[in-house]
Length: 130
Image (cartoon, rainbow, N blue to C red; front, side, top):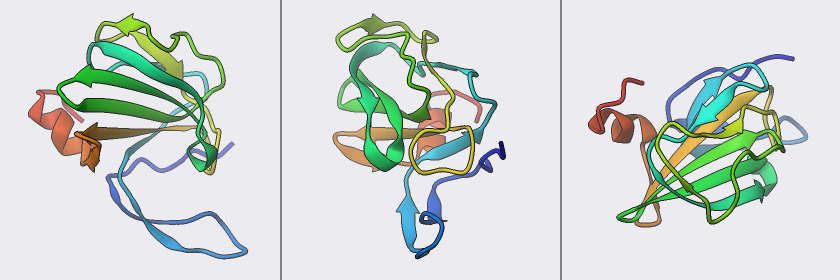
């Protein structure tokens, strides 16, 4: 299947016809083969695993201090469970093609105090190279 093009947050086109609609995209997208392991960006507690409509299956980790990482379009197999404490680097999901998308990819979103923030800037400020 085709891969999603990696790209920074910003304007994206909505789902294919019958209507294409621009919308703001607040995530960082990586094209990868289905089944590629996804690791937690930091330690925290898993607060959600499951389906999320157009965002497909997702995993949410609460890192404390109002910071959450959200891993979207993942496969339906979850190696972690809600309420589980996970250290940084734990495999929390695998890349999938669930929800609205054009192929296997990860859509990473970061929320700070409930507001989406640019994941690339956030990760770079934490010393991670993206």
